[in-house]
Image 1 (cartoon, rainbow, N blue to C red):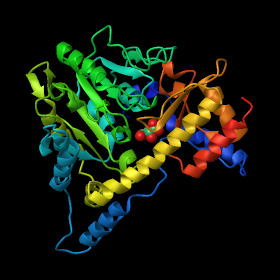
Image 2: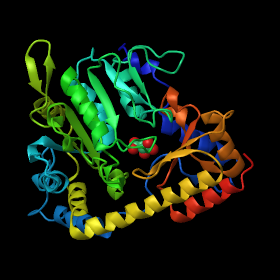
Image 3: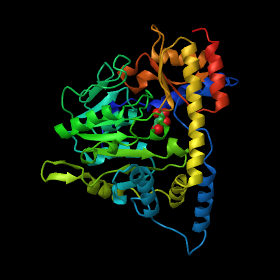
Image 4: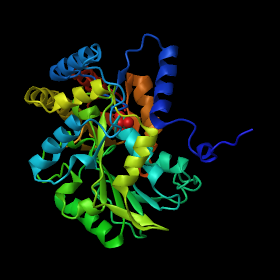
Length: 410
Ligand code: MLT
């Protein structure tokens, strides 16, 4: 009989958001009349933009005619989308990225999770703490994390604490890692790095021969000037950083699935046998072997996000989410709780009152006022004592949740 990948036996039995869904479903079964408001997983609630819907319909019609039908598409994504991405997200900001440095995919979760395929098993990984669990769990699956420890950390991972004391800006690592995952605007804390702060990371990576995996899934929510939308706004980043982007939160594609990854051809990493090797070529090899491309219809939908109508429509939706974020912040502050984020990101990270752990806060919020959030400790040990609320609910749900919190005996 075959053997399993034992690394899977080291990771928690369930993924964070699956565990939360399980708890909420159990509660709902036991309390069928409970009116539960879900502000846990960052899943969007507004429908797709009309411009996207029109493009999807048109693409479906193309698939119905032999003259315009499409079978397998390019694994890297269709040129129409790669070129549009480059023109809009990079060239327009003065950043020189070429279409063949862009790889279209079914989302940033898959790409950040799969990227480890092309990295050696002995790389030392650094993550901010708290952190989006995909980065840690997928490295644990690949055997790069070592064994889980009693303190909630992994043996071989370098954790960079982000706390209110350091304003959620991690200090540069004391020991040199090979790979650093950065996510800005940050999930889960909703905080950001200014350009000068991100520059320190790029400079560090350049000076120490470190690869940065930069997750920019929330860049569309940035409202302040001086917060970079792309790591390539920083000089020299094209030699050290891969950037992941997503249409999920930007344009409501959490169910439709589309994202892209940028790997500049100037980004070279080390091979034990071949000196410096271009990551772009290896990712292309990986994708052409393991991925058959994002659906044509979906890519036409993503292209429509960049049309004038599409841009106006997604901006309006983003504004409604950020209005929710504002309502949540005000409600949390009125409750005399401290909170962070929600200015350049759709997440609000609140400090639980002293004696209440993240999971206790979760249980009480669910059972006492039927509101679901995400326990901070689910994102890493330094998330203990924190709790995340998402701004992706409807306005009515958000207002109702904050009314319940206002009247809650905490
Ligand atoms: C989250 O809630 O952190 C995100 O929705 C998860 C994801 O994007 O995969």
